[in-house]
Image 1 (cartoon, rainbow, N blue to C red):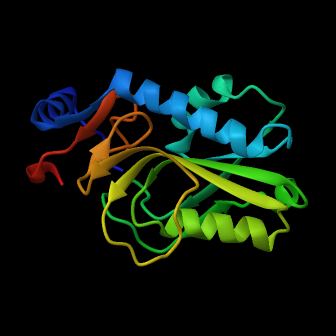
Image 2 (cartoon, helix red, strand yellow):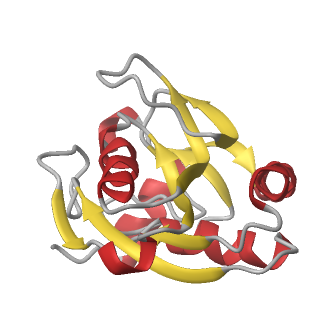
Image 3 (cartoon, rainbow, N blue to C red):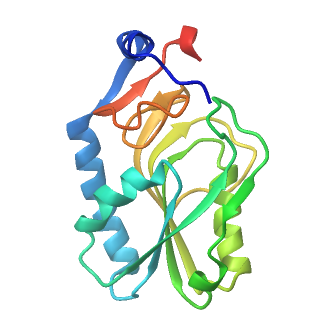
Length: 186
């Protein structure tokens, strides 16, 4: 992975377009927590944060969930720091943690859908009692898979987006809001 200079970072930020403000993201997280509470309240679920972008969303979502839960993680990646996805690589599959459990899978984005579909299928293969998926952002686009998340915070156009866990070449996960990278940077 190539490091980005401060000048490069600031130039990319200046060329990006703010699609969603930080306040709008926070409101979406509130709506997501209400939906999740309705689906999983009282079920003592295992929450799987999808590495790496799901860390931010999970960390912001957990304090809003007012029921007993346990936290674990899953690491299945298709991007590995690139701007386009490849084959799914399993880095951590929590087989024992999900067996017989109600599971909440939390990720930053539902883009092509292949990673989330693979994670949900793996949870069922590993014996989960039920699986609910939640994503902060869903891109409006055609997909090769039929799977759709149960809880969606925001919908954005089919552009390369970053912020609130979403990255651009491993950077911008900390952006305040959801930004779209300029065409010249993608």
